[in-house]
Length: 105
Image 1 (cartoon, helix red, strand yellow):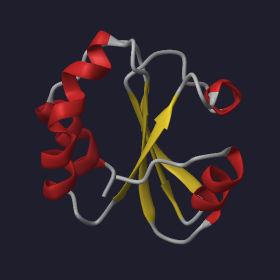
Image 2 (image 1 turned 30 degrees about the vertical axis):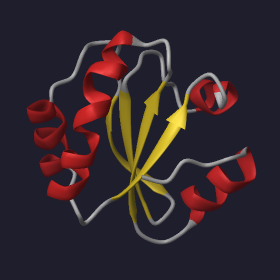
Image 3 (image 1 turned 180 degrees about the horizontal axis):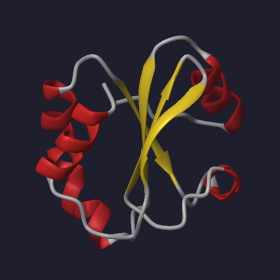
């Protein structure tokens, strides 16, 4: 999982070729902490995607711009364009995330 250090690094990832899943999270978020331990398994089961963890509090302007109104949330960007999103404030299971990613392939 890539963890961008600044907005410039995040922007370069968004513009780069390839399929990436942007996982919006925050340390204080109980539902984020519920799914976070499963993320290595989700990554291993969805190797066609590169995963990027975006701390909503560190990148609050990006979260607002992208319409991330609840976390944990997932946005798929392929070759610089959004192709799918699972954005809400509900707790997500590994199965729900995998089903979402299967529909985004």
